[in-house]
Image (cartoon, rainbow, N blue to C red; front, top):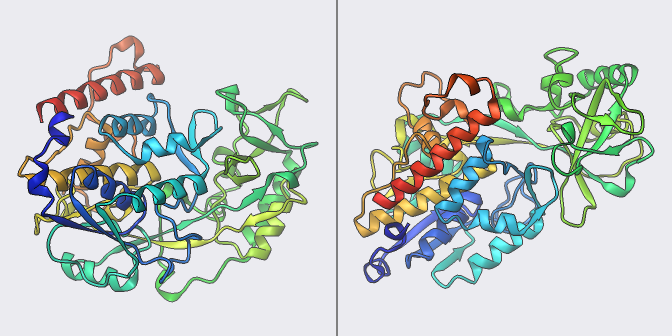
Length: 450
């Protein structure tokens, strides 16, 4: 790590980096550059121009959910978080400071998190915040982290630079429920297989209740899509609940409503289906419905939620909405260091690169910030080893063999294979532990040599 942070500061103070976007990736990149003595102009169009999904003007706002995924290192997302810690990530440190109970998941009080990041950025002398929409890619050192909700004008500028059409898919947000309106005569606390703290609220369903819920869902009115939206491409891990339901009667029971491992200790029975709610703020007053991203009309959402046992009289504090996600064809545009192939002083970071997920956005912003610093100082850029989760992720999105590039999040399938002893090949946890241990050791060795 010493060689990453030990560049000559006097030479860098003369340089300024433009960062487009104050989301997770842009905020992380800005803080990484500033702590290395580099001036930053951080452009964020909010509040002058909104996105349709954000509700505040703070930096690093979490829009869809308050969970950054598992913090267990034997989980792909957990390993990514560990790697960010090793790399000196700023936002991952803030996330743990704003953590709320969620079993093995890193769930956070999202308002506290965004406020903390905003305060840190505004109190950092080397970061100049400019609340204006950018419509052209700036000359000079630039990181584009405009996110999945990039404005139409700036999308056109990116399209002009890449000489390729953007790809679009749609991301849907789940409703948020007021805890005090939940009926705990029916709902119960618990985590699947009693793993970790019993921090989820579970709403059980019998077959008759599930059938009524399912039949309403597949026939519920949806918000009319605009003409250009009708050929939408959905990211599989964030499909609207109505799209999942359209795939078959039992699809939800093997997905977000699976009852396996969730036994109500009051009855000691496994239910036909279970809806889970996850804590959304540190005050434990708000809970989001897990896996219930939706594009239903608000009146239909209210009726659908009322069909969930325990939520029949619940107060919906924020309805689900659907918004456009934009990403570039990274294999044709980027190198594994997140530097563009055509212009060495231009980097991309965050979900616009085709990485999916909050942790992934932060991680790519971290890497882009570090590599921009190294470019300015004349050091070799980091192209992390494929044994690491972040290295595997950045190499995957820049691999030119893709026929139809689609967004991806951290997962074990993209990590470089290793020889696993026969006796533990079928033990998923032990196998992942070996992969994680190798990743951490490889990353530390790589950074020491760099």
